[in-house]
Image 1: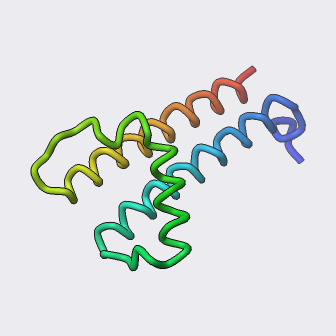
Image 2: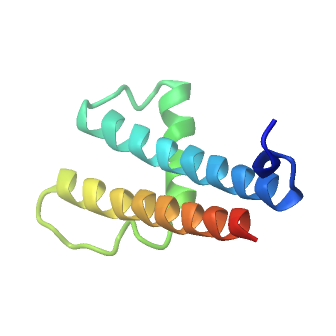
Length: 97
């Protein structure tokens, strides 16, 4: 095993990166479900929608496009990109120290 994977800060950085990835996947999955008009009565769809609403609470109503699909793609997509960028930047910073 390389020394990079033995340090505590490396492990913490990996955990942060994985959490950021999971958050982005949930947001991306909600965008996909919305665009494909997934059944809103399905429990999985409801869970993903609720989780995405919590994760994108700060950005989901940021844009005021006329088309609903554009608001969903840009509002939730922005949150996904920010979580990826910030999460991986923090993880990389932790792995360097």
